[in-house]
Each structure stands twice: as C-alpha cells, then as structure tokens.
Image 1 (cartoon, one colour):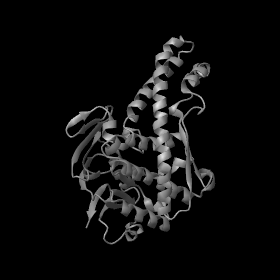
Image 2 (cartoon, one colour; image 1 turned 180 degrees about the vertical axis):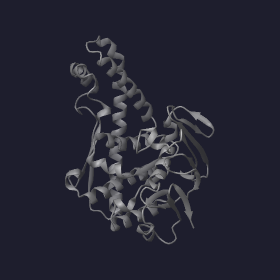
Image 3 (cartoon, one colour; image 1 turned 60 degrees about the vertical axis):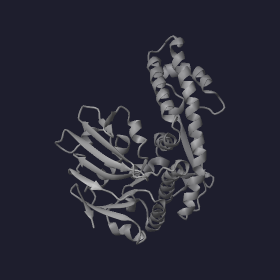
Image 4 (cartoon, rainbow, N blue to C red; image 1 turned 90 degrees about the vertical axis):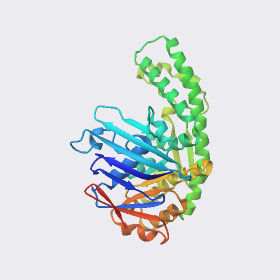
Length: 363
C-alpha cells in the first residue's frame, strides 16, 4: 500500500492543501519548525487514528481552529484504492470514514495501510521503558496474526474489570472468577502469538544488519509478563492478596517485554549511540520486510529527520536498502543534499519543500 494523495486542514501549523506522493521515495526538506514533522505525523494519524507525538488534541489542532480534518487516498499494488477521512473536533471523539462508511474502531483503519515510523522517540526502544518495546512487538503481531487484536481486546477488557474489583479491597473471590477465566484464555493466546513473532523476526533483523554492513549478531529474548515455568491461572491465584493490596493485577501480557542482545551482551549497555540508532533502524525495517515476506503486503516507511539520526556512512547504507524495498518511503531532512546524492540517479524520487506550513512540490 501507499499514500496516493492526502488533503489536510488545520492540522498543527500546516495550511489547507492537497498533496500527491510517489509510491516510492519522497523527500521533504525545510527548516526546523517549518512543518516537516507535522506532515509525517498527519500521515501516521491517517494510518492508526492517533498521533505519535501527543495525546492532547489542543496541541495537534491549528491555533484558533475548532478541529482538524484529514483525507487520504491509498493505493495497493493492484491499484485498488481506499478513501479514508478523519475529522476531530475539540471535546468530541474522532469521526473516521473508510470508503464512505463510518467505523467504530481504529483497528479497521490500522489494518489498511501498515505504516512504520522512525522519529526521535523511536530511539527510546532500547533505553526506554517496556511500553515502547511492547508497542514495537505488537505492531508486528497485529499485522501478521489477525486473531491477536480480538484476543488483546478481550484480555484488556477483563483486566480492567478485574482491577476495578481489586480496588474495592476485600471482595468475594467468586466475583473475580469469570474475569480470571477470560484473562487466562486470552493471555495464553497472546503469549503464543508474541513468542512466535519474535522468534521469526530475529533472523530478518540479522539479515538486514548484514545488508547495512553491520557485524552485529542480534538475539531477542521475550518475557511474557509472568514466570515462564508457571501457568497463568496459578499466577493469578497465588498473587491475589498482593493484587488486592495494590489494587491492580501485577502480572500478565500487559507487563510483557523484550530484551535485545548484541553479540551476547545487552544492547543498551554495550552499543554506542550511533550503533543503537542503526540497530533500531534495522529492527523497524525488519518488521516491514517480514510482513512482506509473509503476506506480500508492503509497508509505508515514515522517517523524520534522517540526517540528524544517522551519520553519512549509515545514511548511505540505509538509503541503499530503502531503494531496494520498492515500497513507499516518506522522509524529512533539513538539507536535501544530505540524502539526495545517496540515491541512484534512476530512482523514482519526488521532492517537496516545506515553509511556514505550506508544502510545495519541487520539480
């Protein structure tokens, strides 16, 4: 899939406009603060119905506006199109349409155009908390295992109900029983899907690192959120007193994590900042490559300020890899000359310039 056109209005500092993208490489240049990152953010919003920068609507809506609208036409390899519209006004829930029909869940939206983003916060994947790594893992599980989203929905609903009961203090344990049963069933499913995904992804990451001329040997250990030697029902039963005292469930898939090792040592402890960045690039690129290998579907890659994140040699290797993907890539830079010479002359490239929120196609 790729974004064929987008139309936006009152999204951050971007003026009302319509843009048409190349299905391959798109380079967006402009000074810091001009609106480059906002454009990347708007595309991400169209893919999942939320921002990667802020959960606060006031910061996303253009000053003095009551809301924003986004519209896109996406196109697959067979030129089949989807039309997606999102309207969000202050103090109201978002209205999302796909092909003219309102949808209730952003899950339907996320399934249309698999979109991967690399932006400054992405580099917290190694050094940040487990939430970042769960999101990374679950993006892939969602797209390759279609039963995952329903299992996760049922699990989180049960978890919320269980936690509500726990906060009451001393309760009749029979009230917890039905929620515990559903948590056990769905937790087992989620654990299986995640574990299978991580095992399958690791060799893809290592293949991409070799393509990027890196000598790292990566291994990922998956922690499911409770002791691997104990079944989840026993965990819930044994931890009930602690959970009641705390008012929440301590263990389960909501506490899952992954730890990344390079050459047998934890990556966050031994890699330089530059090495961490190229590893994270490889990990993100591997998700798209694995999805394509498994289903034939291509992802969209949104890369914000690639020049600030990678030195010239690593940029050259990444750009060379991006060319070979034959997928849509939309990347931003302050200086177009920091990346343009790194692509082959015959590569299909469309260039844009952003100034004061206005995006112009550069011939």
